[in-house]
Structures are given as C-alpha cells and as structure tokens.
Amino acid sequence: MEAPEDFTEEFLADAAEKYDPDRVFIEYNGMWNLKAFLDMTMPAGWYVTNVFGLVDASTYELYLKNMRQTIMEPLKEADAQFIGFIAQYDGEIPKEGDWVHIEAEIQKGELDGHQLIILLKVYQLQKAEKPDNIFLYF
Image 1 (cartoon, helix red, strand yellow):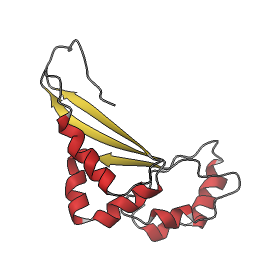
Image 2 (cartoon, rainbow, N blue to C red):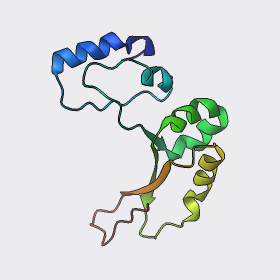
Image 3 (tube, rainbow, N blue to C red):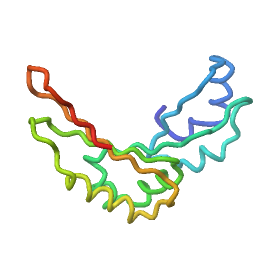
Image 4 (cartoon, rainbow, N blue to C red):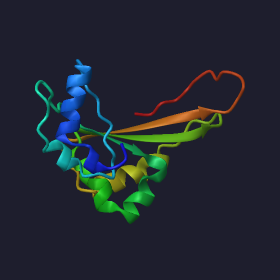
C-alpha cells in the first residue's frame, strides 16, 4: 500500500471478509498519522491490543533532528518502543556508552513514564567461523 488514503475502514473490512483471520498484525507506516488508524472503526471482532514502536537506531538521531514531531507522535502512542542497533561483530564486547545517547534522546522526547524502552543490540557476524558468544543487550 502506497498511500494512507488507501488504508481505510473499507479496506480492513474487505480483508476481514476475504481472509477471516484469527489474528492480525499490522505494520503501519511510521510516516503516516497513527492516530487516524487508532480512531478507525475496526471490523467485528478486531481490537487494537498493543502498539509497538520499532526504531532503527542507525537513523533515529538524524530523523529526530529533522522530523522530531513525525518521529515522536507514533512513539507516544506505543505501549513499548524497541530500539534496534546493528553493528559489526568484531569479537569485542560492545560498550554501554554506544547506546546511552539514543536512550537520552528518547527520554527527552517526553514519552509517557509507563512506556517501556527496550534497547537491543544485534551484531552482524562477518567471520566465517562461528563465534563462541553472541551478545544481545537488553
């Protein structure tokens, strides 16, 4: 789907009728107005139970600097924010300071206190051999 105007209550109703799903997961475009989606009338039996904010840390600071309101509005609606870090695995244990700045920027964004921020680091493995340990920081 290319345009937010195409994501309508009728579209959702058609999908409900055509597929009759048990569960629905929607990856909503972060540049679109999330509030408009949350205000939609859902098809019978459909309920919005959770909203998650997924953030790519490699672009977050740039987007925050240039499009702060656009970036922060959907995160304010989220029950939890997941901040993904992808770095090259070089055999060294990553330093905590690598992600502290991003966390501080999110906190400055005035998200509600009840929201959970999960900081996740994922290391792409460049070595041919399998490493002894893979570090995931939460």
